[in-house]
Length: 266
Ligand SMILES: Nc1ncnc2c1ncn2[C@@H]1O[C@H](COP(=O)(O)OP(=O)(O)O)[C@@H](O)[C@H]1O
Ligand SMILES: [Mg+2]
Image (cartoon, rainbow, N blue to C red; front, side):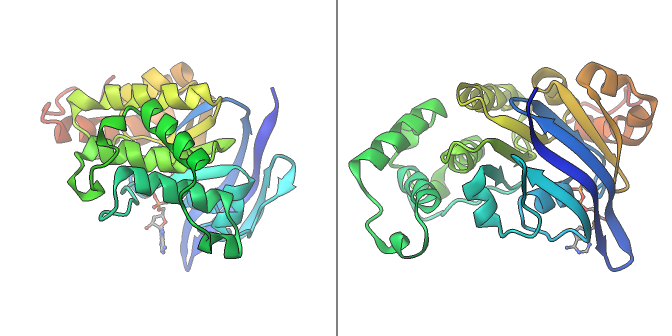
């Protein structure tokens, strides 16, 4: 196993609020990791620090043996860690194809090169094969504002993945997606990423998704990682069941109209 990401003693304070503390994680190549935890547990703060969107208060972050603490997000993306946000960040007035072209051009270019023409045949071919891989080719020429939510999510994640990052971090890929659609959406995303052998960390509230797609779980509670274990073990961990699954599983089921009457049991 080759470690690609090493996080040591990471901490983030917002004034008196400690959003992350004592975060120690080693991520190995090709792992699929689920990040779970109740609202406010520090999941997004962790992703924001690794991807350069938030400056840690203290600690260390090494990617492929290189210190990336404090580097700007775009530099980190260019080095090989990409991300998506909970709310898709697509250009609503542009087509699906043009969104992906822009995402791709940005990852290739630096500085003045951004002023050179966006379109070239090689980029277009790459974008079209990417559209096919994410199963959104039929929406190629649709304006992004008209897309169904699931397609917009796929486009957003396809944009984050177009640079073929070593690590992709997804913030709640299934949020806003119906129960009927969620497995198809995840199948498409995970198969696309598997083909590129991408290391994936994704934040997820839905334990059915966690169980099905991840091999390892990082469970956050009040800014700390309370469990880092293989998925089957993590979902049986007493702390995880008390502080993560109980509330969240209940919330998910209630939100889905299932009544949440299972007492938080899996
Ligand atoms: N920009 C910020 N300013 C102040 N407090 C923040 C900020 N971002 C997050 N927090 C606080 O940090 C804690 C962790 O938040 P977050 O990482 O967003 O949680 P999660 O993604 O697990 O729901 C929460 O208490 C939240 O209110
Ligand atoms: Mg969050």
